[in-house]
Every structure is written in C-alpha cells, then in structure tokens.
Image (cartoon, rainbow, N blue to C red; front, side, top):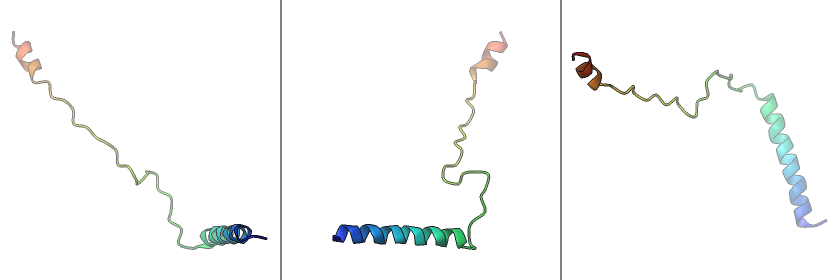
Length: 57
C-alpha cells in the first residue's frame, strides 16, 4: 500500500470520528426559524412629492 492509501484510510477514520462527535455532542444549537447569515434587505419606500402638487389643480 502506498502513502496515499494510508492517507485516504486516515481521512475516512477522521471523518467518521468527527461525524460521531457531532452526533453525540450535547451542545448542538437549537435550530431557529430565521437564517442568521443574511439579514433581510429593507429598502425605504419612495416618496412621491409631486403627487400633492398635482392634486391641487
């Protein structure tokens, strides 16, 4: 077996160990309803200042 074979086997064991650790970890955060990464983009409403001028005539 070559060095890459050993590295692949070690990677599989490491991935399995991390998966088991994540599944058994008691500190898993509770899922929230909103996604935290991107806040909602709220654009200000455009003001139509010319509407009042046309209403008077």
